Image: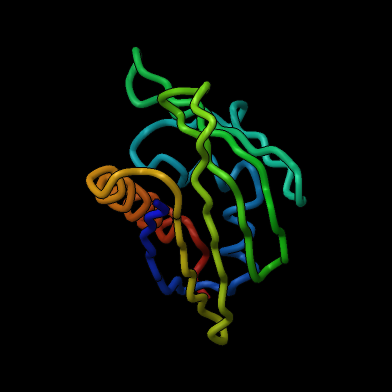
Amino acid sequence: MTDSFSITRVFDAPRELVFAAWTEPAQFARWFGADSDVPLETVSLDVRPGGAWSAIMHVDPATTLPFHGEYREVVPPERLVLTLKNPFDPNDPLVELVTVVFKDLGGKTEMTFVQEGNLGAEEYIKTKEGWSLFFDRLAEGLPQA
C-alpha cells in the first residue's frame, strides 16, 4: 500500500531562487536538516534525470544520517521528482518518491511537496513535521522578492 503526505508553502521569493535552494549544494546544505548540521562537503547533487543526490545529516556528535537517492525528473524551475532511500537502513530496497512543484506567483513561489511510498502513518506524521521544519529554514534564507 502506498501512503503519502503533502505540504504546500508560499515563499516570498521568485521560483528560480526557490528551485536553486533545492539544486545548489551550498543552499541545500543550509536548509536541509533544519537544526541538524549538514556539512557542505557531504552534499552531492547531480541534478539530472538518473543523477544521484546525497547529504549527510549530523544529528548529534554520535548520530549521522546518510540521505540519498536519485533524480527521476528535472524541469527547471518548475518540477523535481526524486527518490529518497531509508537513511536508517541503507540496505532497505524500498524508496520514497518525492515530487516538488514550484508555481510562479509573480515574485512569490508556491511550492507543493509530496512524499509517497511505504512508511507507516505514524512515520509519515513525524516525517511531515521534519520537512515542515526544513521548509521554515529554507524560507529564512531566501532573498526577499
